[in-house]
Image (cartoon, rainbow, N blue to C red; front, side, top):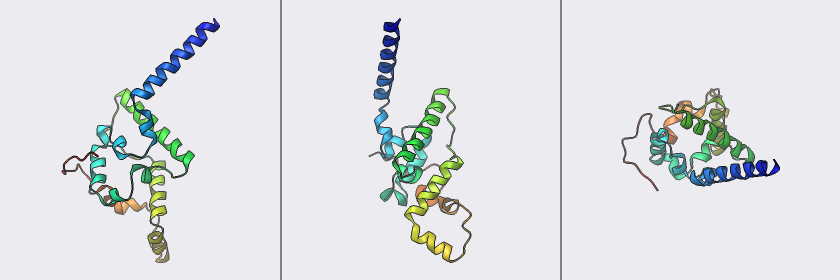
Length: 154
């Protein structure tokens, strides 16, 4: 009985290890934007970022994940779970829409990088109840819609 249990655990570890190797799991722990573009749903988002003004300054993770180590990988794990389960179940949306917690992470990163601008807005008593990207969505990803520019891959 003990042998069967050990054999089952070893077999499970082998299956998980092969799965992690085949899917190039380690790439998803990094910040390379081409990894984020592995899914066709991300094509237009990647293209708009690649040709947008933030491409020289920020990668996907700089805006879409927290910068503290543990929260970053918790966020990546949750997002990865949602993406993998959608792929496995065949429920891949035409366009990915960010959930509230994702929107807040992006907002926090806008403020973190653009502190001087945010301070100036607060000094002028402008309305600060909206997300930065409610008005400035085109800055990081260009105008909405599919990019007509040629595909670029590094």
